[in-house]
Every structure is written in C-alpha cells, then in structure tokens.
Length: 343
Image (cartoon, rainbow, N blue to C red; front, top):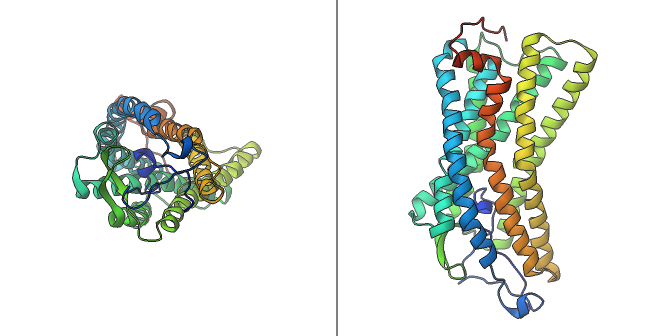
C-alpha cells in the first residue's frame, strides 16, 4: 500500500477549527521519500512551541486584558454619549477579551497536553472561533459603514436609533456562533500516540480528508479573503475620495482610527493566513504527489506557531491604537468633558 508524508497540526492551527484531526489508531502518514520511511519527527517543532507559546501567550493575556479592560471600563462609564464608532469598538474589545481568555488553555495544551476534558475542549475551541470571526467581521462592517457614509453621504446608523447598530453587532455575533457549530460537534480530547499526549482536536466524519479540507477552505474564504477584500475596496475608495474632497474633522478622526485598526489587523493576521494557505497547498500536494519532505512540514509547523502568536498579539495592539488615535478615549481617561459627536 502506498502511503504519504503527512503532518499533524498543533493547537495553533486547531484554534481556528480548520486543522487536521488526528487519531493514530485511525491513520498515520508515512513516506519512503521522507525520513527513510519513518513517520516525520516532530520533536523540533514541539520543543519550540513548548517554550515559545506559553511565554508569548502569557504576555498577550496580561497586556490584552489590561488594555481591553480599560477600553471597556471607559466606554461603560461614558455609555450615554456613545457614537456609532464607540459601539463597534465596544464589541471589538469584548471579542478581544473573550478570545484572550482561551489562550491559557492552548498554552497548557502545548506544554502538558489537554487536561481539561471534552466539554472544555468544545467550549474553548468554539469560543475562540466565535471571537476570531467576530473581530474581522466587525471590522468589515465598520469599513462598509465608513464607505457608505463618506462616499455616498448616507448614514447607515445614527445616534437617534442606537438599537440599529446594536442589532447589526448582534447579527454578527449570531453568524459567528453559527460558524462555530463544527467545533461544538467535532472537537474532542484524544490521545495522540505519536506526540505522547492528549490533545483537543476535531474528529471529523468519514471521509475525514474531505471534511478537513472543506473546513479549512471555509476559513480561508470567510475568515480572511472576503472580509479582507471588503476592507481593501472600501478604504481604497475612501482614500481616493479624501484626496479630492475635505471631510469633517470628526469623520476624519473616526476614519483614521478605523483605518488604523484595519491596518493593524492585516499586519497581525496576514502572515498567519499566508502561511496557512501555503500549508494547505503543501499538504494537498503531499497527499497527491508524495513529494513533500519532513523538513518542509517542520518549517511550516514552526511558521504557523510564530505567525499565529503574532496574530494573538493583535488583541494587545488595539488598545494602543485607541490611546494614540482616539481623541475621545484620551479625554475619557483624563476625565475631561467634551461635546459628543453628531455622528
């Protein structure tokens, strides 16, 4: 029987519910062209992750909770003067906080294995998926709102009807909850004999390869490509329009802030998404042409660990952007009175 080089993805890939599920009793991957017919050794990537992940996740957790907690506290204190932008930022900060709460579980999994049981595996995986999708979908919604407001001079939302923007945000949360259904169904704690520990992994129905590929491409399309295209198109048009006209000061400030958030998102998550796409294509090629090497998969594994950790630091960057670019936030922190915007 011909067998192929393969790779078992770590928790970094699993966090998005798009990783490969692995159960050594079900299937192992081998290759005559890789490691002299033996299973690809993962010691290098596991040792790297065991040191890198807990340290970086701890830093991200502390800084992220402090920064986003401050944002939520300030917004709650001044909730009577919320603008449309404030409401979106509230939900963004909430999504960041909930996502950060999942990091300690993944850090423990990397170092000791998954010791929390199947129930927490499902809850933690689904919670991460919901809040990751929520972050990028909210940024896409804000971009569309800025585009319609500036280019077409149409207010999608207004201060007179705050329930409309709240309803839009709740709709985003609902869609994200629906996208997390596979995690509730398939995530479980399973012992990986090759890695010598229990992991929180998705065990998909047969044929597993089709299900795994489907969920991964679902993430590529819905979790990055479509929202990224929406944001790029909206802000390209906005920037071109801004060069030919003058915007009100408040709109200029809000647009700069949201543009900063979008740029920070791309800087944080684009490396991971590009690495994940390369990994998807490499895995497909290895299963069809049997020409992949263990070094290639090890390099991709370490790259996924590093780039996903960079993505998690995005939760710490947003509060810094608020402090430097959001005038209202600085005024709130200094307890200065100000006239609310007419947005």
